[in-house]
Image (cartoon, protein in one colour):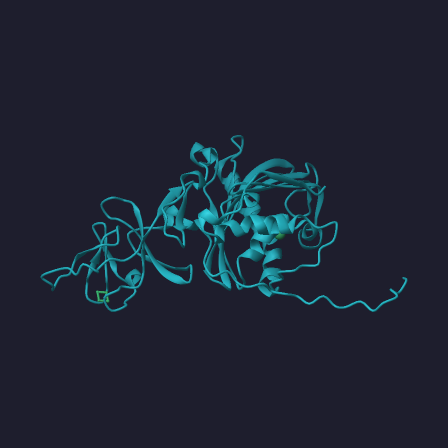
Amino acid sequence: MNQPATPRKPHIIVADTMPERYARGWHVLDKASEITTKPRMFDVFGTRLAVYRGDKDGQVHILDAYCPHMGADLSKGYVKDDSLVCPFHAWSWGGDGICNDIPYAKKIPEKAVIKSWPVLEKNGLLFVWNDAENNPPIPEQEPERMEDYYSGEWTDWTMTQVPIENNCRELVDNMADLGHFGPVHYSRVKSFKNIQDGHRYIQVMEGGHEILEDGTTGMTTTAIYEGPAYMTTTMTGSLYGRPVTVHLLVSHYPVHMNKFLINFGVMMKKDPNLPDVVNRDMVDKYTRMSIDSFIQDVEIWDNKVRVGNPVLCDGDGPIHMLRKWYSQFYLNLADIPEDLVKHKEHVSL
Ligand code: FES
Ligand SMILES: [Fe+2]
């Protein structure tokens, strides 16, 4: 190789600053069926939430977990009717966040109100809405209804939770990261396109996959982010020489700025010609394979640093376009430049 005439300077990585808020939008906490009248706590958005299902209304309610009376964790309390009762002095909090009973007081203080978070149960999933501006959810940003989930022709989600010690942008970067598919996932990418459109970001990829198909069909995937944290992929591949179609869910929520939790879900179309037990076996097998494939990314995310000024080459995907799109969720609604949300397509291959 020819040596350059002048000495070349090493690139200094600039991490760029962490955002000062968490992304605006819907975040999956778990499968909706996992939420019962036994309250659960979720450490999310740098705070703690208490999540429970009302005994009478059957609705999921999400409240700030720390009781403003003297700080107990409401998720350690219990549900009475549709309210959550604090384990410390038994103040009762309605799903609207308003205190509706103090067993030993004549008058409930005006200030006895905690934050109640917007909730959505859809596609078998429980979503919470985050917004630093405290506006109500944006109707157009509600995740699309997955008809397949309701059709009875598909299995339910098999969910796996994966915690990662890093900022969640590292996960989202993956959408545009064409260069990692070969080395990390052993996939042979034949075509690769990214599309941004409002709060959606879409990756269309064609190729083969060493783990997730047996070489007979090849594999096509369409991965769609609806908002900052909810990604679904439809994949066609093969298993035991049979074509299979699955929906994958890669949804995350930030625990804090340097940790996030991935809700990784698999749903498979049942083959009506096969007995239930074989269908179940296929899903289990495919789920394990998908997780094996997915886990390949995890070790990288757990150990990588944040690079605000990456050195990119001509074979890389549109990392900058993706990051700009993603930054809209960290801005006040009124401040989002048109360029971040207008329809754009980028064909890498
Ligand atoms: S701390 Fe919750 S009622 Fe006292
Ligand atoms: Fe990946």
